[in-house]
Amino acid sequence: MTAEAIEAGPHAGAPSNVDRNSDRDRDGDRPLRIALLTYKGNPFCGGQGVYVRHLSRELARLGHSVEVLGSQPYPVLDEGVPLTELASLDLYRSPDPFRTPKRDEYRDWIDALEVATMWTGGFPEPLTFSLRAKRHLAARRGDFDVIHDNQTLGYGLLGDLGAPLVTTIHHPITVDRQLELDAAESRRKRASVRRWYGFTRMQKRVARRLPSVLTVSGSSQQEIVDHLGVRPDRIHVVHIGADTDLWSPDPSVAEIPGRIVTTSSADVPLKGLIHLVEALAKLRTEHPAAHLVVVGRRAEDGPVAQAIARYGLQDAVEFVKGITDAELVDLVRGAQIACVPSLYEGFSLPAAEAMATGTPLVATTGGAIPEVTGTDGETCLAVPPGDAGALAAGLGRLLDDADLRRRLGAAGRDRVLARFTWAKAAQGTAELYRERIAAQAAVRGAAR
Image (cartoon, rainbow, N blue to C red; front, side, top):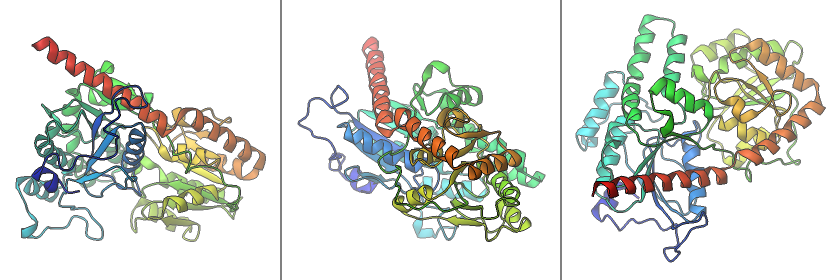
């Protein structure tokens, strides 16, 4: 449903995924009316679209009414969870990213701000989405019990939105900014990175004023304190997880000898793909059948493409994107090893999902990854981030030892089932909603 249709009649678009005759939901209280905001919901890469899809589904299963307010690329949602489109100008869409919109595409001053920020090298979407969301929510006061922002952290979400605000920060984007600055090879490139990440100054200012922050790991909690200056008592950890019905073992899927699978954006330094490519080159001297499948976009020119060419790995590295959930799961099931080479992660959904299939994992110790993957040698093989030699050694060890692969794969799935499921994430998130609603009600009561 479009924002315009709802704003024409604020109650006409009321979500239908809750039984209005129910006095209590299955998590112990009345159903909540939740607005879940996401300025970007790509279902094929990045964690934000995955987070919104699975959290909204599980909250609805608890009996809550969930409506997602999102912008392009829109998230893929499960049946019964409505999407309200707060459309941007979609300036970064394929196949014409950084496009110049036609004059008749402009609707208002927010559109003009979006284009002007892009033209000057910045990334406008967190700010412009927050302004569109504020306008939309103002037209629908009373429709929601709680508003949940998925890391927009824009100025538009400050002030009275008509309902209490809870904000998820997966990890501070200042971490990404610093890693890209460290990887920049010229002053011009560093200046470009600083301009692109200019929105992080806004996010830092907004984060410090938020009453309630939800994050996905203890590591991210500390990073939010250190990088954004948020008070520790305002940050709550709710682990996310894997869809363990979808991400499950299937003995009928044949294991492909030498296959290593990873999920990564090609030239995002934080993801560490270049180190995995270097590790593959080392590994193939003793394991010539070893090959890599990357779930993500292939950059035709950049550090990763150059490394693939330099090591002669054109036939040993394959990129895939736009595949279905079932195809992705089978891809991971058929690999002998899953790998997370990231320099830093605030949680690592790909690690949890791979472990849930029973595929053995080699992962770095960057950020919160060990919080997900567990103990080296028991539930995974752990290596230092940015160390291609250690990655090659870990991968080689697993390729050589079928018993170790089976043991780590089984233990990894057990760990995910015990700790990291979306049902548990939804329960913890709903508890935080209720705490925030009660806290705001108490403040208003004291002010009377």
